[in-house]
Amino acid sequence: MNSQDIDKLLKASAHEPALPTSFRSEVWTRIAYAEQRSFGAKLSRVLAFFTRPAPAVASVIATVLIGVSLGFATTQPTKDARISYAESISPFLQEKAP
Image (cartoon, rainbow, N blue to C red; front, side, top):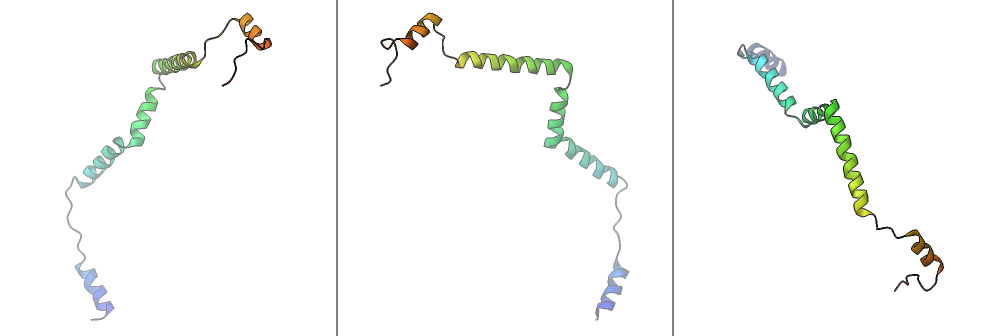
């Protein structure tokens, strides 16, 4: 058998199987379901939630409050201005590094 005979045989036996009538709709339903469950779709829904006015304002307020509280938590207590000045000019009041 040569390649032409094989080609003719393959063309003659090529038979597409019959698909169920709902095959296409089931495929597109599966694709749509997979797209809804993807990370990008979930992230898009979360970001869309924050574009509404009430959640956007709440998130800005929460961010500002967290920033202010962290700012106050990390600052050192301030001294009286007169004491700070006296320590800066007096060699006896300056803290010595060990």
